[in-house]
Image (cartoon, rainbow, N blue to C red):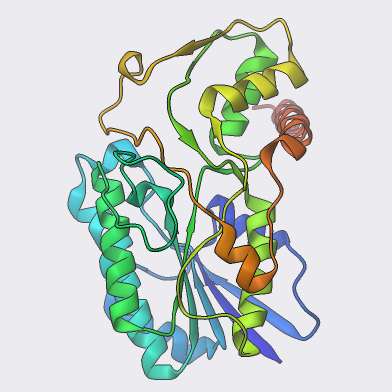
Length: 300
């Protein structure tokens, strides 16, 4: 039996990993903040001792990009110090570690797409904390795989769900059209992580950095336009520039990832976003309607 411990429970990727099919004979456990104080670094070796996993997938992160500007210490604890502690514990126990990182380690000052050898140049606290987490993870556990993904989307939360809700209700949409990245479906990333974990356990693949994201680029406006076309073609949707979008943290203009290494080494190609965005948007709408009905039935 192969044991997997997923650190994280409530995030988009952790929820997708809970729903994805795993190989026969694999047993998967999840440890979220309700189960253990993941910021309590001294507790991490005990988590591994209790669960004795063959594979640890670390999805835990401080992901509030704007809030990180005011809460730098909290961001660095979850995004740098905790990953380092997990990596140290995995190396000591001989466990395979897959750690999740982000395209926001790149600042977009150079023209993308960025491959795994590109030098990180983050432009915000979130990106700097994640870049530090990558470096600490690989220093503490050189056999780890550090996965960079991008623009993660799912039917139940995040950008896609917000666009679907607002499009369905007819709210005006003003969406940035000068930032480029790789929209990635959380379910597709989860399935790819399972395959990479199986490859690594079988001696295939290699440690180090690995980009895992959708192969097709888009702007946020491109995705929003596809959602609107699916749910409410008459919705009020307008493109805006980054200068017109007020936010505390700067975003990279071009954080596109080169994902060729994933295909060359593991034979994996995630689906491009035009293949799944309409279906995901309809899923957002159905899920939102179901939640509304549940609230009505409960008297909320």
